[in-house]
Length: 463
Length: 97
Image (cartoon, rainbow over all chains, first blue to last red; front, side, top):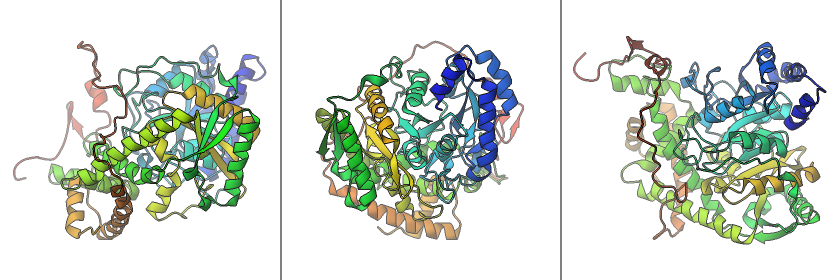
């Protein structure tokens, strides 16, 4: 049952919140020792007790899991980093505040690659999360804990964050739904910044309609985030059923290269037939700049990360290593606090921003980003929705991608839309090698309604 | 491109941490490979292309110049590893110890 199904059952008195919570904790007891999706968990009795007062609100006291880089006053917010092991935020993120106001409770905080830098959740300082479909494999990342918790049945729904694919890729690898909204639609207040021009909070859910419901709760302007768009919140659930008759779907040939293999390519053909059966039209398009998204993304995101992570200085946030003078204290604290991947990105970002290299690397990447955004805008002159696989492969094995470039390549299909700031969703698209394989749909800026309607139309026929 | 030891050390100073010799060696190789892969960007002609604007049409974001409550001092200091009498405590910044 999905979240909306649970809410309906609660409103009809067919079940009680206590039963729902017991069901989730039964599953947690069974799978969590293997999956390890959570870094902290609420006590079920507390959720039941506090839930009583929330029964009259939209979300009826149901627990929702939250990625551990999104601030919560009642749980530590570690970002999967030793640096923030005991960090306790003094305010809730806007998205969390809005979920609570709508009657949800925070179920616990989910594991992630340190500071959301990674595509497998192996880079968490607190150990990896495993894919509930096959514990030898990664859940994807960086929101791997959120995706695994929803896929395993431990959580009804979760929040993740997506900078270059960190909601969509783990949703695809675990076999659930994950949405990255338009940049600026969901306020970033309280989301620990990785790359500020790319970061977006998004829902990870069991169904498209659940995604629509959570987006309706968390979207909309917040003056505390100056990059939050002045848009009026919408109810994304009401218009889901309009269908896709007459809509044009573009399949970029760059998103279906031969290297994907025959099984994945056969699935893409199947998606195209389903779209046509539902009255949509499929056309081949080309997004030739796709291959430039990876270098542009890693230069921009690492540059922004190197600036954002400067705040971890041994003075304000929990970890500090004593030293003779202030510079040595900062260096010693950061040396101890950050893991290998975070150091790699800070080094790359520092390089890209440093005197003598700035124009050639960071400046160039910012101009290429403009071209990529134009390319999408042009594609959307011709088609309503762009589609293709979310990730080039299903879930890979733990330790399989030790080479950073190989790891970065698992995001090649999610990076271009992140750079362009347009919304995209991953829904279960079938199986490859017996493992979930995600279908990604991409829409123009602020066309979430259209995106969700297309995803809703397709999800039933792909299951 | 070649990443020299001197460049690695300069980046470490700018980044505000120190790598162990093994880490430095490994990260130097990674950076060299990543940057040579990223040379691909130079193939594109970006003459006259402006840098990206993440929020089209949004420029300066103003708010009314009205006082409002800020974080209370004890809250702001809550996560500080060392604090004393309402202040952050840090090692000396100037002069000999």
